[in-house]
Length: 249
Image (tube, rainbow, N blue to C red):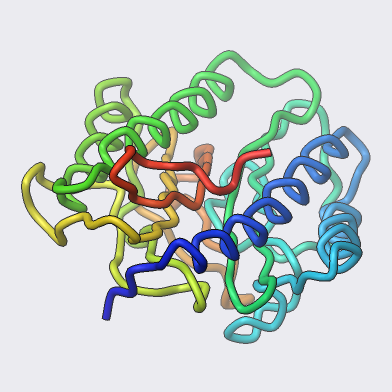
């Protein structure tokens, strides 16, 4: 069931999304060579809880941390670790969220660690821009397929692949709600977009092929060919005045 949010509910979501966005910014500012993903996760936890919110990833489906932190060929769901040390030239994707007053925020970004290669930068830039292409398509009267088509057309035209096994989602009182929001699709197809819908739009884009696999830890998803992957995400409200990004600092 798709839940359309009232203005009051959207206001509550804005508060949760603001904390989510600020926490992601704090983590991003701490990304540098020599830092562990465990340290980044602690920063996220401390910021969210300091602001009287709850880290909504922590213990969700058994996930053991505040943030999913994924390095290089790790696509999503990387588990923070004291042994995972960032080094110059890496890219690191951080996905996190906060719950406040019964409503959720969710966002992600991929950060450069020191100096990265031109191709890694092009992947990150393309993935970020594809997110905004998807958001531009999230208009009242449109379809979910319009969002996915906007993302995939932009990325595939630049030689990258769209992960198909994992998708975006609705969000609100629950972190994961209907509808699913794939990063691929056909324009004019899928669920109709209505005022009050809130979506987590999150392109996961690979440097090589779209195929992925999950490691033995049961969480970490990597590219099957070992090439790089990038991930960006915003929580977005569908309104009569156009899409509104809620996870924006």
